[in-house]
Image (cartoon, rainbow, N blue to C red; front, side, top):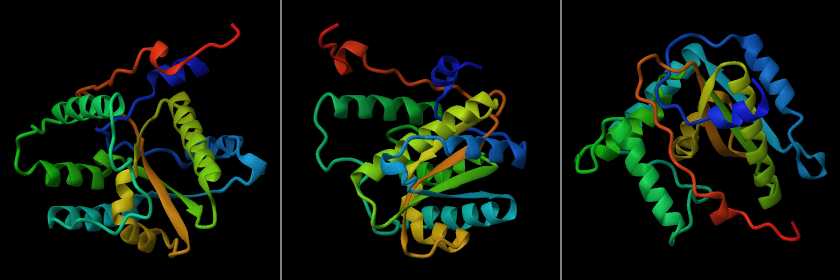
Length: 221
């Protein structure tokens, strides 16, 4: 699989099979992903790879919080700006509607928030979740570095025939995650990434993208 195919086929999968992911594949992916760029070569990320019984217990604890209506831990950073405007709000709303319709959750369903939270806290059935942390002293530049690192990981997973789903949702249960992986309170949880093989027969969702003319300007070309 070349890099163009990896980029084009990468999508946030929300239905994984229980087929285990070989440790050697994860090691190969993460070792290669260390080549991702970072300003000053700080490599500010710290990743915990969780699977098996520890992950099952973490999912159980997080799901219990979600189904109990727990609003989650106080956020350490906002997921989105407080007031999104067009065209960003339009893109967000359209993608959300498509996403949860594909999961069979109707917008009018009174239990919609709990169902969404429970699916997320179960990592959509993924047998592996990567948790990416940043040292608390890091700034916006290093957060950008972490984003490039996570994207590199997800593209390498595609090259291995695997799928993924980045989940900022885990920051809502950051204390539960920290206790499970032994991260302590010093680092900030950036995101989780569910990893696995796509479940056969699951509905496939591929959200659209803005036309390149909306996001790219060529100057001098």
